[in-house]
Length: 403
Image (tube, rainbow, N blue to C red):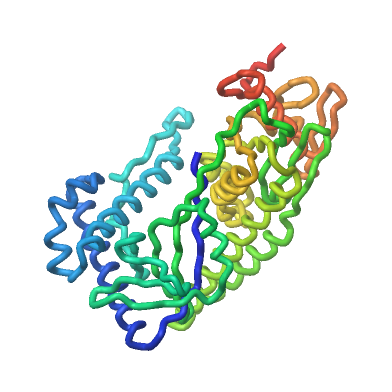
């Protein structure tokens, strides 16, 4: 399999003229992406880059003054964004209740979009070898609409990706807070994970009170507290409410700034959490996670004043971080069905949601089993991982307990 990472590199430009050239190229690229997005929206979402090239290539070159490779990159950027949105829509189906009170799910697709996807942030995708390259002196050469410019990395940490094992791909030029950045994709082949190499099986239950409760094959549970994250979320929530109440232009600017700051903080928190799990359990570990597609539906049973925290935690991002960090050390993440993992007794297999006390965070079974409710869920998730290792292709729990 291939391990893919994004190297985030801050760069320094030589002068203001080069900065103006790069900024102009980024803005033309953004406008071209918006134009292609409107075409895709108005023509039934054709996401074949070759067909789009036939229809739009000449217009992109002429109207936006893009170079050949940049015009092709625009088409790829737009189709990739629509495919990502299509996947997100599919993972969050529309849920409705009929007249008889029965709940139904309807899969969403791109036709659910009311407007074309907009590209607000100036950007520029540069193809390795065509639009950007590395010079012998350590500087980088970037293509613009007028000429190539030379930029310098601010820090040398990214040199680790030039040991010959990483393949560098497209670089995305961005600017934020008056600084310039390149986000470069790096791919490295790693051996496929085999069941026989598994040394540890760890069931991981994700939540809010504990960001993760991990139960391993030594019957030990590791808790990673979510108090810090919850407090941070609530502070931002209150600040956002005050700014929205003001409604002034300056308040809206601050709202935009703190949203970006909050997202960066949450991303860093997910990175930290994934790294903690991988470092703690080491290589040859099978991390078992619930498939939380449609997790937003749980808000129906959550107090209204707590719903923001419930839906705003980026579970999918944590999952993606853990997948690539685990693969980097020779471990793997397995996703299993989430059915009844919080309602099942790990000791006797009884499934009864009344046995879970949410208020006191306990799971108490008639058989005598008593544990923290997050721990019991992690134990059930780990058992599904054990079943997968034993040969069950898609392990899951059903309403009728086995045995």
